[in-house]
Image (cartoon, rainbow, N blue to C red; front, side, top):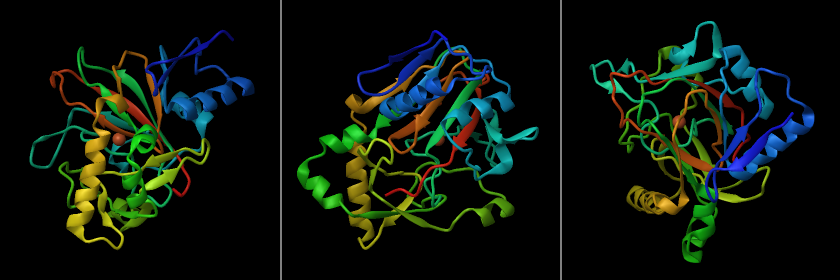
Length: 279
Ligand SMILES: [Fe+2]
């Protein structure tokens, strides 16, 4: 099989061409893809046209499927695949833009998903980019003093933080029972495969820091987030029809952009992969 893996920015993202994910993938190719995934944190497969069950199989090259929290968005004929759509509304009638505001997926799980994959089914003509922040680079470039201050700290993650500016869709009673009340994760985590450290924060789900007064915790988290918002840590993905994008939640923050013509449909399939307990 002739295929290429090429960087998409200096530090984050690689584009994979020449692989048809509906076909069986050789073990050596699978190994190389997994290595590229860990090294580049985002892999973009171009020109894929995958039915939901083919998507599950393709993403399965990188791990085991993670059961997502809110079954409301599961496809009825293929529940491991959820959909993301700009045609959903809050009960009060406002439009719900999934994934707005920087976050890492499902960090309120004891073993949060190591990866999330999105496959473009329908895209607006312009806009709707996904932005990523490389949290390894952020950690590497933090002042020594900040690193010392955050070393060993644990953050409290809940389904929806009362400090979050963005509101998630309400869970059904049945889903709520399956979601843990609160978990704690280290603010500095070590990638289980590369050994690199990363800042693991989530403004949508972090409620506080263990053993720290609330104002101090919010100040520290705000400070880390401000650092993360610097453009040198970003990779911005412009979607093309047929893209399958898989990213590493252990290494990145990400967000969606609601900056496009909302009369046009933006619809993607989403699959997640099981991760480890962050350490
Ligand atoms: Fe997300």
